[in-house]
Length: 155
Image 1 (cartoon, rainbow, N blue to C red):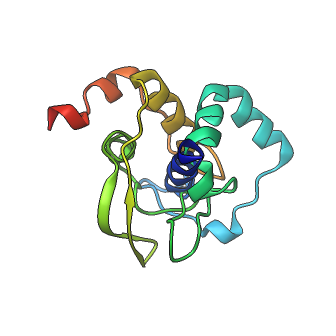
Image 2: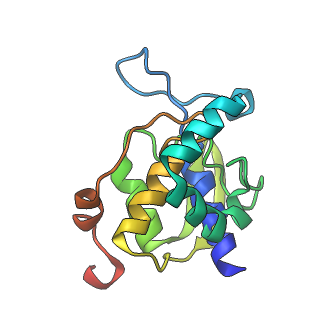
């Protein structure tokens, strides 16, 4: 159950970062307006099956299957401005968790997200799933990106 909760949180955080690729700088889409077709969902699930599985096991409980989180309790990943233009921040969130206030899309959340006990490969997979689900089009991270990000034991 704890893993499902964690996956939900990560998913919400990652999927709330929808962007408009027509602009030079990425911008956040209103996550209530994000509509994903069944075909697009299949493409994401086919491209990131390991990430989807990890998300369901560790992030889903908090961030929900749609990435919108739980208003007032768990921030959205879909359409979120929290990770906009900063993929390293997503990796750090998964590896190190967080505690205290954060502001996502103008809403303040004050909670705890524990660090996720995942391998570097699993972190890469779940981050890529979140970066590219629920209308998010934020690219990918590499295994090297994950390895170059501080782990909890190296702070």
